[in-house]
Amino acid sequence: MEKRYWEDLVEGERFTCTPVAFDREGIVAFGEEYDPLPFHVEGEAAARSIFGDVIASALHTISACTRVVVDAHGEIAILSGLSIDEIRAHHPVRPGDVLTVEGRWDGLRRSRSRPDRGIAGVTCRVVNQRGETVLEYGYRYLLACRPLK
Image (tube, rainbow, N blue to C red):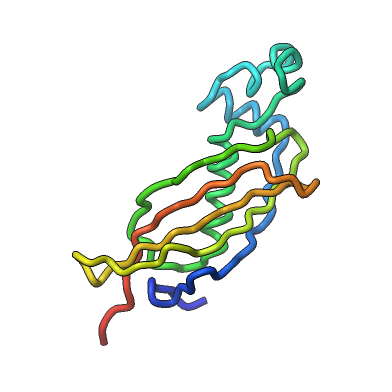
């Protein structure tokens, strides 16, 4: 796939990413390392929680989904991430869940101060195998514009 620049993106263009599977071992390992709340790491405490079992940290879910979003774009001229916007968690991610990220490019604009760069937003909706929306969030990227020849 040829490298894509800011000018190659289309406002509203949609894409679907490779599914992401979550298992108990991965959920607990991430929780132990980065988000050790009892419902992410402890069997008995998780069973007594409002969730009734271990659930994935939202940070784990966003990290795993970020990977497949980046992979879905192929070689794209991202210079930097600018933000992760308005994260909304709707349903917990449980062991055995398989998530699909549905993304859309939005908020495309060329930088006024640096016309060799553009801003691009990605709005993401993450859905589990039951069709439930588990997470919604967005990114803002700084991208290179196509080099002048």
